[in-house]
Amino acid sequence: MIRILSIGNSFSTDATKYVWEIASGMGCEVETVNLYIGGCSLYTHVKHLRSGERAYSYERNGQPLAENASIPETVKAGPWDFVTLQQASHYSGLPQTYHPFLEELADFIRKEAPEAKILMHQTWSYDPESTHDGFPIYNRDSAGMYQAVKAAYDQAAAAIGADLIPVGDAVEAARKTPLFAPGSGKFPMNRDGFHLSVPYGRYLAALVWCEKLLKLDVRKDAYIPVTRDVAADPEALAILREIAHSVVNPN
Image (cartoon, rainbow, N blue to C red; front, side, top):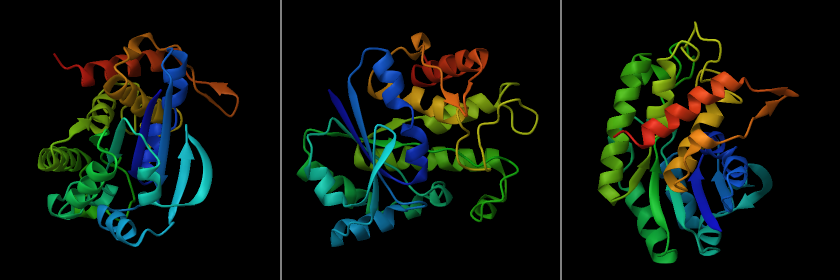
């Protein structure tokens, strides 16, 4: 079994929601654990790491299990094959907000879970019409925010010698297609201007995780998310599978 621990926020909840379903359907045994606090920054993660406070919600395989988990206890409850880290969405394009907190988290993980590979979960920019309080930081420019977020995650990953899970790249690629274009598309990538849409945005993110971490060719995925008893559109899912595969394997 491959075990993945995410230390994040609601964006890691979005990204890991369908990982277990996709992987299981493709014959890959995986366990995903997500520790999250909504809107949590790397600074706040380090604060809770130092205190050991049980401040986190705990999800397993996309389902909520507990509301009183801590970083130290969960990391030590390994072994973990992968541990993912990310910045709060509104700070994600500001490189100065990552340090020294990212390094402290990475050092702790390497000490307590030396078998784990650390990855940065590259998050996505907001929808062009988003009303998120953090959007003015980026002049309400979705494309500009994407470039800032991409650059900041590249720098952060290099700083701790980690690889990237390119979800933000995949979301941006999807937005360039007629079916998923902001405003005019049939299936937008965001449900509230910043969180991923259900099921399409979340499905795309999970595909990227499965392709990147589990080395699955997600073009062969047969899982069909169902929301409120309505199955997702097969054509849309096929496009997202191709996007995820091509973003993880650009050459």
